[in-house]
Amino acid sequence: MKILVTGGAGFIASNLTRRLLAAGHRVVAIDNFFLGKRRHLTPFLGDPNYTFIEQDLLDLPALNQVFAEQQPQRVWHFAANSDISFGTKFTDFDLKGGTLVTYNVLEAMRLSGCKQLLFSSSGAVYGEPTVHPTPEDYGPMLPISLYAASKLACEGLVSAYAHSFDIQVWLFRFGNIIGPNSTHGVIPDFLGRLMDDPSHLRILGDGTQAKPYVHVEDCLDGMEFAQGHSSQVLNYYNLAVPDRTTVNQIADWAVAALGIAPETCPRDYTGGPRGWRGDVPYVNLDITKIHRLGWGPRMNSDAAVQRAVLEIAAQLKAERAEGGA
Image (cartoon, rainbow, N blue to C red; front, side):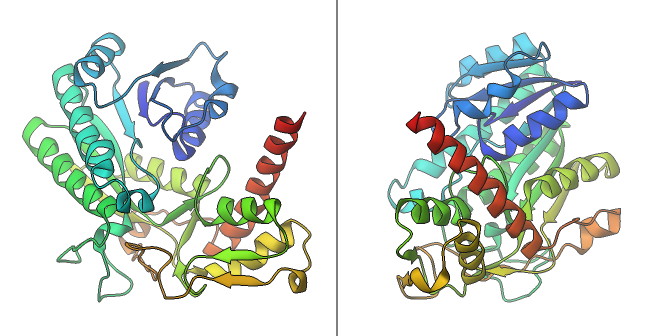
């Protein structure tokens, strides 16, 4: 199958590309390198089944041309702003990079006749729900960040296109996805700060924030499983783990991974229960629906974090050694 992957130089998409190529698919990846990294593409550039196109998805005529020339049979849509805090600085960032980009992808699919879409949404669309664990039919959804508002708007567009133009969709509301090639978020942020200055660790919030952390391999396993085992026009699932990990626990493992004695590394908390404005400090997603399909994560939240800390620490060390060579 020929598969188009948006945000192809990003964290999750680069991990997806590796497994798609290993399965024998032809992959066309698109990215504009605003957040994606060229180094994430290096392992694929010599593969005859891999095509990379540097393209801004806001350019709809150019995107239509890509679809017309490549004729993909399925789209995995990951392109979006992946840093929620950007929305407080640039209020149109998520509108353009999330909602309008998603409209363009859907429109290019409609015009080219591409009929299958896997879409990465977020558990942030629920806002601060009063039901825990939070199921897919919870409402009303009242996002508290522009990132989450954009994802919810994208869900509306995806649903409308699915029903209006017979595009089959698998939509996933993620927990916090972690693993190799991640460029920001609590784990690379902590490790980067500690590598720069191991004498203290600045922590946004009070450290008690607790979220379900999903390793990227479990995330992609879940997406592939749901795509292969559900066949409605619009299929939508929470994709998370049943437990949560606190920011303080992540700090403990980051300090240990770098061989820093905890007593030499005090923590500087910024105070308050949120890491930043728009942050949902406690997330607990109900995964009963996808579990009934027959899928469950191999790693719980703590195991995923511990593995990701070691993976990301190794990557950061290698990148810094290469940069200093």
